[in-house]
Every structure is written in structure tokens, then in C-alpha cells.
Image (cartoon, rainbow, N blue to C red):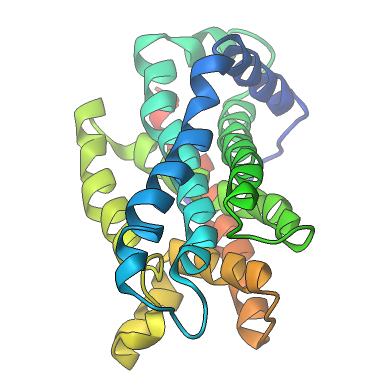
Length: 260
């Protein structure tokens, strides 16, 4: 089967998702701290620190401008790193995948469960950040609640990209390459802290054509600002389409990695 083949996926993937969810809940006190603390630190340092030097961005106060980007970044980090470092630890060091394969569940169930859990973790973080941002007065309700369902396909997108890197990396140290060379540049140049419109036109096409975070930030910013344009439809189609593509590629790469 090639990189784009898609075999049958059973409900057993939900058992894998449940296993990771139970492990997450056991350490919920530690896991729930980042989504509460991160937006506060970013808003204080960038929103109100750097923002004090910036009157507004396209008529929007700077803390309000970066608020949807903070949610997008949290979804990216939580989903991507859950399906890279955490999945690699479960696969290689904890031998969790070996134990699951000994049951009636298939490799496809394991990979699908891992991606679904990565997306769920990103959605949980987005949901936890919304009340914090609302208390700071940088997002409005109920419109901003739409960030939660939007975090699901975005989480699947970043989790699927993460599982692709996990499938091909020779060691856990090698996962630093996509973290530094792919995630960090995207964090800085996807319209998170300045509008993409100030970049040269060629870079704007590059961002919206190839950078997942740029499309997620654009969609989330349109939701919080309640300003809808045809670009939103493009963002949604891009996120869902690329998420499906990387899901299939990740599934087949992991099958090749796990089948000896």
C-alpha cells in the first residue's frame, strides 16, 4: 500500500483515545496549568508590554489582535507535541503500542487514536483559555465560543503532521528538527504578532498556501472580530483538506514504521 492508501479504521481507535485521556486526567493538575498561565504571560509581556508601544493594528487594540493567535498557538503546540514527543515515548520507551497491538486493535486504530487524542488535547486547551482571555477583556462571548469547535480540525491537522514526523524520526532527539525548523518559524511568521498583510505579496501567498498556523490564526481572528470574508471559506477548506491529507500520510508512514 502506498503513502496515500486508506484501510479500514475501527471503533477500537476510541479505546486508544480513552487510554490517553485517562492518563491525562490522572495528572490533570499539572496538565491544566499551561492553558491558564500561558495566555496570562503572553498578554502581560506582549499584549500590554509591547502593546503599550503600539496604538492599534488595523483599528484593533494590540492585546485584542493577538488573543486569537494565542489560542491558535496553544492548539498547535499541544496537538503537535502530543503526537511527536509523547507518542514517541509511548511507542519506543513505554512500549505502549506493542502492548496494544497484542490486543484485537490494529495499527490503524492506534494511530487514529493518537491523532484524535492530540486534537482533543488541543481543543481542551483552547476551551480552557477562553475564560481567561474573556476575563482580560480581549475576546467577546458568545461569538468566541466558536473557537472551540474550530480547534478540532486544527488539532487534527497539527496532530497528523506530528505523527508523520514521529513515523520517520530515527530517535527522539531528531524531533528537535521539526520543532525548531518548522514549528518555531511558523510561530513567528503566521500573522500571530503582526498582520501578514505587511509582508511582501509573495510571502503572503506562501503563508496562506503552506503554513498551517497562518490559516488557523486567520480563521480564529475572523471569528473573534466577527468579520467574515471569503478568506474564511478558504481557511476552512485548507485546514480540513490538509488535515485529511496528512492524516492518511501519517497512517501509512506509521504502518511502515511499526510493521517489521
